[in-house]
Image 1 (tube, rainbow, N blue to C red):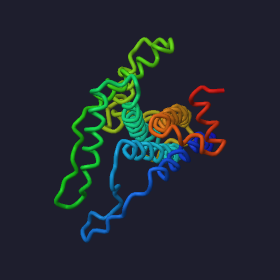
Image 2: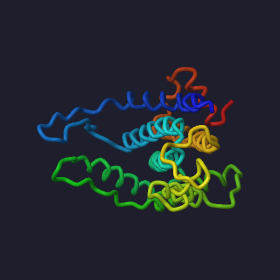
Image 3: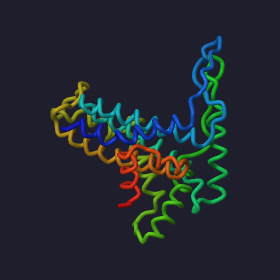
Length: 253
């Protein structure tokens, strides 16, 4: 398998995200006396939220390439669940400024972003907070924007965008929670024999490669959407290769 091509597929999105981080400016290092030392943004907002989620998606994807090389195909799916969630968050938050977004969509993004950044304590005494929103709610709000956009472009689909996103989310969540059919696949390297050493060199490599190739497009779409919605004026100042990538993502010749 040409695993290096997957790295090439994600290279420009990686550079775009790193460039976006420089555009937003660096965080502040909080050198506290306790265990809660680390970087924090001084005035975080939706752009910072999208940046962190996009960064996590790319790191998870690149980690999955290493995992796939070693033959741990079930854990490729586990990491792709992280990628799917992060990319959905990026597009949902970034597209709250789109014309098709409802007032509820915009209000929920503002509320979740504020909630996300208020959960900044990581001490022995303070437990991390759970975000007060269900993934299906995000799928419904973001799906509404996508459905309107696709309809305006004459694109038909048997299922709504929300249904498609939820399907991916639930299916890949089964790998995180060690679902029965998903985990018993570990018997598959040699017929009927449990193997915990990975399945490198088996047909599972093809499945891992195809999965990663598909999700590289998911990340590219999320990154392009983030910049187009939150920092469109920055595209013209990007290197020529990155500008060409944006034209391709936007379908501009």
